[in-house]
Length: 185
Length: 353
Image (tube, rainbow over all chains, first blue to last red; front, side, top):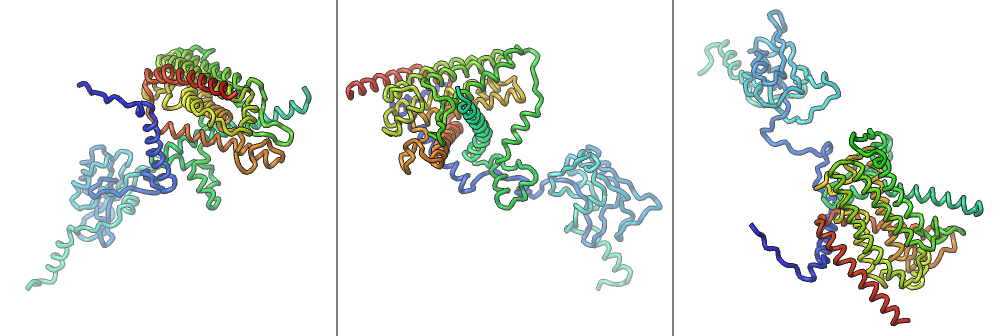
């Protein structure tokens, strides 16, 4: 395709209108960002962007509303994890019992290697207990590799309390109701 | 040759070189800041030595303005590996940065940056052929770039060197001829005298506006600044002539570019904007007191900085010319215009005399 170039008038060929126009535009931007503070830069560590809902950040373990560990150490997430970032040590037959009713056990140790994790969300999807969630953290830093392996304590502390449905609560209530039979009218 | 002269000359040289190098360092910062503001960004605003943060109000403001960035930049250049690629022509490779920076420093020697401080004239060398000296020295600058391009033994620097050779030679002609009307009007080649003339008759930009225009454009080309930055031409030639350079050798080219800018700004102020004079507050005649002398130096520096800002502003405003446009502009517009300018000025002066 041939683009026909508009032939410039003498005035335009002096470049002067272009110069003036250029100074006007750039000067406007200069004064705006110098005195008006209207820069488009987001100054990252001080300002952070709003994480959209559904964002897949780092996976953390959560507690339920009563402060109990939700994870029951079923190891499904460990099996499904594509980069093998999750490592679970179950309590074993003689280990500590779960800290909540309606659960047989809780993990003795639960580690996520954040250097390996790809934030795919399979662990969250596979978890039958809704115990692990991809949260909003996207900037994980450490000075050594060891620091980037998050253990159970750290994951629980970072994960906080899950405010969603308590999956077993209904059943727990039912069980309790069964104890003083007959209940329902 | 008396001791007084030698001692004062050495002091002046030391101070001027120190100030010029300091200005170069901060010109780089100013360039980055201005480019940032024009592009709605913030620019360097983090670097600081650890204790500065604790100074109330001023400390954070200084960090915000990036005032410590030049220190970090300089340190980086000093500490980086000075790498010499295998294929380069070593002698020229080492020589080129020196040839690039020395002329730009030498030009400053003849610039009268103030009138008088006590009994000392504020100029390092009060040459009678100041302008000729300047043009002579500036024309050496091109060798640095051409040599760098040749020495690197690699195609992009080579192209950059060739283009800059063509460009700088072309624009030197226009630049040289643009100054002739000034000389016709003043009748002297001594830069101090030219300023002296301007103290009595007003700034030369009023007498030779066309000269100023040509000189301005040509000095953009001579200092290899946008819209004429052909030797570098990041978009086409990677880094141009200094592609193969690293560390301090690269820094020397970088410094040369900015001290060229300072020299060009100083020349423009001296030739067309009255040097250290201001038409009011009694600053338009050589200083009698120490205070006035310092005021003159400050006026000169302020004018220079204004031109530096214009240089930077233009860089972030305009796209680059195409090579043929550059040559067209140089040879077919500015050279004839400069010639006509000489003729017209001469005729007017002849009629008036």
